[in-house]
Length: 288
Image (tube, rainbow, N blue to C red; front, side, top):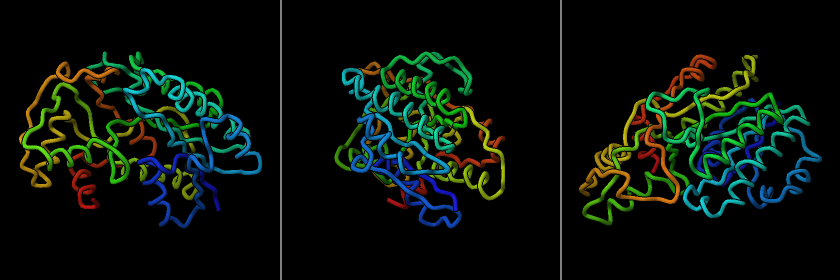
């Protein structure tokens, strides 16, 4: 029986992976929280792994407070780069495959065509820079790693755009939402299922683990304005939504104006079918 470790149990993706793992019979799953593995402490990582062995390690942990990272730089670099580096080194030491989650923010805001994994990366936020460094360190420490970049993640767990809009839409008569930032929402359930599908193909179908950088989001394209309109349409919320430009909502960390991802690599390599974002939104709302 393969042993799989989920790091970052408390987050959206970690919670979803743990939920889905309950129905899996072909592997034993383990997970960490900040109480069992404090990634801010380098010695805690080596101590945690010194008497353990895993076949796969999925790193869902990250510093994701994008604006706060601009001033709270040390914790962001610690979690997104240094800890990722140390975790990948532990994976290499024990011969475990490493799956690491990254972000569209590594690209910055200069692109206008669907983002391919090898496109130029010019992050313009501390969050994006620290996540890019984490990617580079992971691949150097453990060449047998898969990095999956994703965007606009949401779920029934934690804080996210969907849940914020649901709350504001019920509290207010009108909202202003930016329409000039374009990407694709990603339901954590779909990303988790893809990760587990890849592992299952390697474990049970004996498919080769092909390391490298991949992209995953749901299918389709929308702006944050379009996403909000769809949320309210599906839930019957009558709040008026007005489209506005990003400069009306200045933030400490710049947001990518275009983060639509080219997902052909992950679809072709692992025969992954991806759901349209509107269908996944409906699925999430039913769970909520």
